[in-house]
Length: 134
Image (cartoon, rainbow, N blue to C red; front, side, top):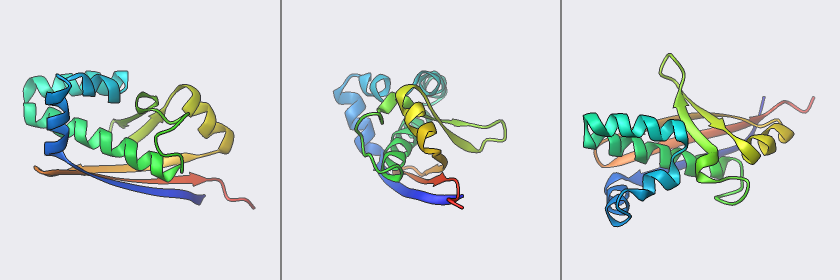
């Protein structure tokens, strides 16, 4: 595999909290895909802090991914077209859908993601790869 692009993003959790307050919670519905949203609601029901951390890491991962593939947040990269879910082992993975999935498949792009959070910040790192040209 060859590196297609690398992206990283740092989010201040308090800024995500402020956006959630300002939008009366609609920010989560705008940004998270269906599977992410289900997980977010379950985590938030157990702990407001953990729900917010989940939202911040997923937002950060989308930003980092958009940088790694070189599109930024423009078509076919949309908030809900990319989800960061977890393998059974807990390892995070990106799952694309719709036009974004087709765009990635047409270019042979796959990606690896890692996310982490502390009380004040969430960070994500993405490596987008393509098959070796040889």
